[in-house]
Length: 224
Image 1 (cartoon, rainbow, N blue to C red):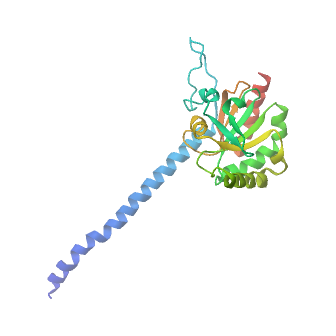
Image 2: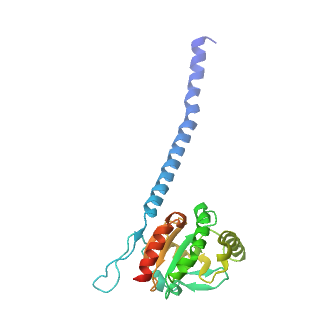
């Protein structure tokens, strides 16, 4: 075979060899863009926001920015609620009557694991302000039933220490509707401060990083 013929035989093979690299580059670009979007969402959340809103003419509340559409209504909805670590079913309306730190966590969430000891450290201050803590596993994270209870109990006991058994701290599992109402993006380590009526007044993420602001807003709500 002559040299020109050899070149003609080999050249067509170069095109297909390059395609996998282009596909891989495109895949990595998609991954990078997705991670950037998640990071941007967390940055926006980490600034925190007050969720008070004026009343409309009919006496109801207008939608609060950043809160799921059903967040306020879920408190009175019969199917929105949570299951405690002990297996008790509770409606979201049970969160009325006392200011509450409502916190959505996940077992594989590193920032959640780092934040639990911080919340435990400041639990006495929150209690002094009249608050209780309700930490709920996001729907779809840990399995429900005995297995999930074992996993959540091990997670909470190992990280909360002595605060694990404190009556002011409830652990449990959020229902699908409650998760979607307060955390529609499904991102763990999001928390809300609820007033005595059960209405969300403040939202932020990662207590490890935002505890000073959390306590500041808790004091305002306590003295307001």
